[in-house]
Image (tube, rainbow over all chains, first blue to last red; front, side):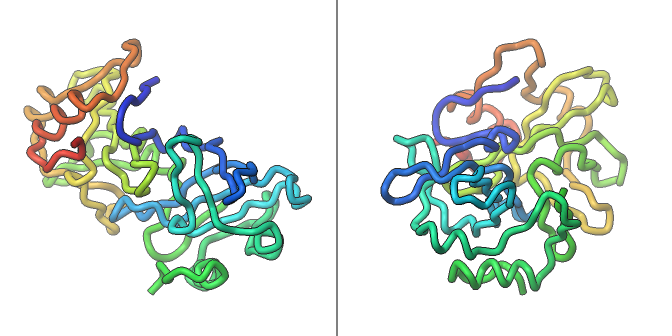
Length: 119
Length: 119
């Protein structure tokens, strides 16, 4: 498979597993998928897995892309979020028949206080 | 797994297999991966597979994202490229130990006549 040197390009497939840290440098979890806008090619959400670190089990945490900053030294993303905020955040289970809807998207965007993607 | 309704969101993992058409509506091939900038979250290249349609076998064709337009009616991407142009385009093999470099990226961008991503 292709590898990438220079700049910060990455195959979307390989973003899975990228570490996510808080401002204190503690590892919170990993990115498990990116949700993009097919038209613009812009990442809108990162779906995080916190792997039980917060006692949340297999929940999927969608975070607005704007809440993530890539740290080239750490080779991972940093989020300015405390654990309590993540515990109460919108999630979905593996077993749910989950679908992104404008209502759900707006709820995520509002929870993290970012301008909404949804019109 | 999650599905998405409304707008044009898609899990990056699921972009693989999206059809690519020319302006005449002929199917040229499929997207096999998206290459994104980890910092901005912007798709920079789509890696296409033409599945032997052009007699090119298993070559991977990176196209600048800007050359693709998403067609919601077709549920696929449309490119304004003729087959001769694709035949001579930069590609890489499965068997090569391929790596993205600024030089290679600039060559792709120049071939398709788009402003280069590479500084």
